[in-house]
Amino acid sequence: MKTKMDFPAINDRRPEGLKEDGTPYRVLIVDDSMFVTKQIGQILTSEGFEIAGIASDGQEAIDKYKELYPNVDLVTMDITMPKMDGVTALEKIMEFDKNAKVVMISALGKQDLVKKSLLLGAKNYIVKPLDRKKVLERIVMSLKK
Amino acid sequence: MRVEYINPFVESAYNVLKEVLNCQVSRGELYLKSTSTPVLGVAALVGLAGDVEGRILFDMSKETAIKVASVMNGEELKELDDLAKATITELANMITAQAVTKLHDLGFKFDLTPPAIFTGDNMEVTTAEVEALIVPMVIPYGKVEINVAIRERL
Image (cartoon, rainbow over all chains, first blue to last red):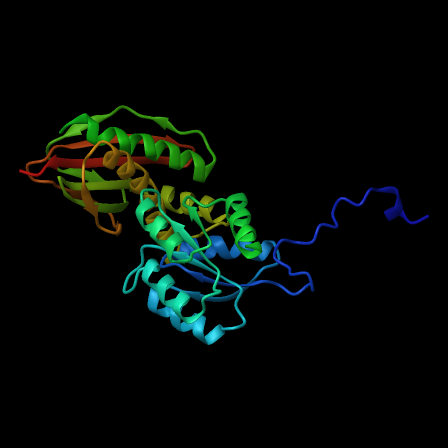
């Protein structure tokens, strides 16, 4: 008898980062802090997501999005960044692709900007400090919207 | 300096350190300094300007900074490299954001500068005409001093 048969299958949940067809969701991470970029990247790759690209300011985010499009499923967008902030970049990305899925990453105390982003078409937001559960939950929810 | 300016920083430093490092945090004895204060080795400085003005310094030894950054990154960092500095900057950002939200709720309006990281030996900080309140936070990796010098705009 195969040992496998003796145990209930508890681990056959599909990783959150994979689509129905088994290919990974592709995410563009936008943040000016190397630490946050790395943190989000680690959380996402551990669940099977693919990091399609990284940008460290708003302008770079728009350029990268256009370059990757249509092979990008979601963007995580920091709000406070040099050169161009995340809200402006969100607006421009939505102009380019009205179906873009953008999740805002915000420090506490930026409620007004978060509200504005949601009105502009952001699918969801995550308030720092980031934790694994919060990040995955919000991102998965946004992909299903 | 009015104590209501420092309390939000102490509370949020306590909360954020506890949350991101997942460890015990205890508050050391608070003290006031009107002359130069020594800097422990790695300091993240955030400036404030508005109804109140001044600066906050998150100060720790280089060893503590490296350990804190290692825990936050989930990997052993050997030196205070760019990633470690970005991590300490982010820590300062998180603490400041939480404190500032509380101060805004109390009715104070002001802007912040992005944190700047200073590193080196034998440094001192002097804030002319404003006393600095210092609250040491003791964590298993050493101590982090929250050094606040803020006054109402004249």
